Image (cartoon, rainbow, N blue to C red):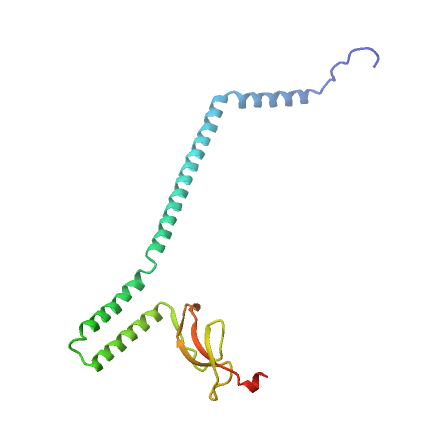
Length: 188
């Protein structure tokens, strides 16, 4: 401010020594940049190798899962089909026995085959819906006609035209039923 150039501040000798030490440490650290670069490159190469291995493993898992899903779709019914073969064999034996068997034997064979079929369906979660005498439920029953009846309440299932079936609690086919109609005097 007085027109004279600013002179550097005088610093205590301790500060100068500290600065010199810091500068020496910086120089020592920077003395071998090639070694530091090689170390960083080695870590980068190791990480790249890990990435490639992880990517390959991920791709293998994806392919294996896709193959497993494809096989599950392709062979989902394998056990069911194997069990159905016993029923087919039973039916074929019944057809072959027609010429030499009497009516009672044929009937017993048919009943045995039906029992085998029912057991197989139950084992695979197929349940029969036979709502005879139960209240009509449009969720599980399909009304094909209505008839008056003195034996059952109106809205009940009078007879089953065709049984319904469910698979593990899910409706496969509704039961086709005849429902008891309300009498004419009740509906007015």
